[in-house]
Amino acid sequence: MGKIILIRHGESELNVKGVYYGILNPALTEKGRDQAQKTREILKEFDYHKIYCSDLKRALDTAEIVNIKELDLQIDEELRELNFGIFEGHTYEELLEKYPTELEKSQKNWESYNYITGESVLELQKRAIGFINKKVNLEENTVLVTHWGIINTILSYYFSNGLDAYWKFSVKNAGVVIIEFSDGYPILKGLNIGG
View (cartoon, rainbow, N blue to C red):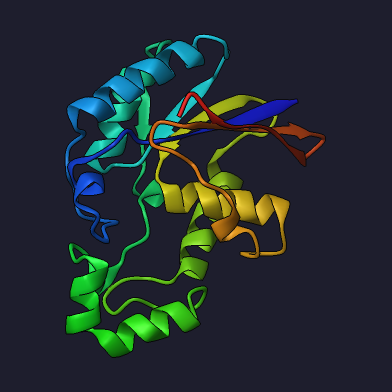
């Protein structure tokens, strides 16, 4: 019986600004670093065999803080957040003004809408689950330090039909989510631990 231990990065500078950002690469705030320190204490309770993280700074910095066992970090861009394309760096209000048609399309068809020069949530989920299928041994405990979108696509995949539950989980910055696998069957054992 193994676990996937999902950790969302701590608060970043762009979380504070309230803009759309996925592949932009801000640093953690001081609060974000404090959140990661608290998550490090939680990770003491788990014996994990591997730790993977997104290559984006906010996730990488979080992973370096929480990695209580000091294992080699496996850095992988497949764990990056959703690429919002032309929406990157804009507030909702700015998008209403600059890209009103695209914003409306993104809301009506949020699952399959492909952000111009970006990707769709369906593509994000395919990437996240592909990563697990290729690289994660479900018989061991594996930590993934990543982003809200990746975590929610994984939760939705295992606990609903496709993306039905994508918006139904609220994972806080530096929050820990635990999925335990019993003969490949996923069981949600924790949500927002510490976050």
